[in-house]
Each structure stands twice: as structure tokens, then as C-alpha cells.
Image 1: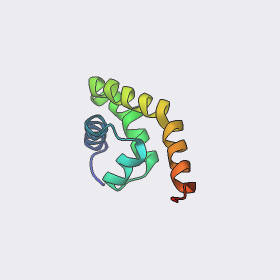
Image 2: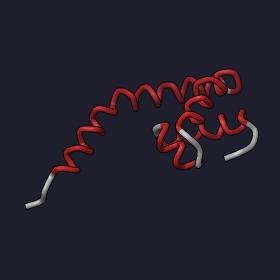
Image 3: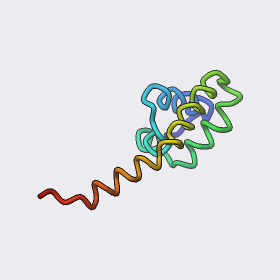
Image 4: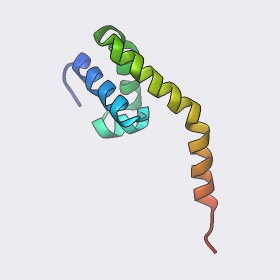
Length: 83
């Protein structure tokens, strides 16, 4: 996704808050890299939309706290063999 970085940061922030998305999911949805998403929502969004920035940080903190659970579920699914 090309264009104005500030506008992209706002769109990414809104997407993350609405969907509770991870950085990877947002990157996939917008067709850009995880690094771009992280830079946009961590640096640019702080000055462009401070309230949205706070909401995004709460979602990302929740995702970070839950990631070990998602990893365990993915591993269990990978190695679980139905009988």
C-alpha cells in the first residue's frame, strides 16, 4: 500500500482496533511488511492520532500477552492426529 504514511498509519490503526488484529494480520490485509505496520502504529500514529495510538497499544499488548497461547494451540493442531 503506497501513499501518505500518516494516512496509512491511521488506516492500520483503525483496522487493528476494529478487528483486534495482530501486526502480521494487518500487514497481510494491507499488503505491506510487518516492519511497516509496526513503524506506522508505534511511531507515526503517536503524533497523528494519539487516542487511536493508545487503543492500538492496548490491542497489541493483549496480543503479546496471548501469543504463547496461540503458539501452543498451533503446535497442538500441527501434531494432533485424529484417531
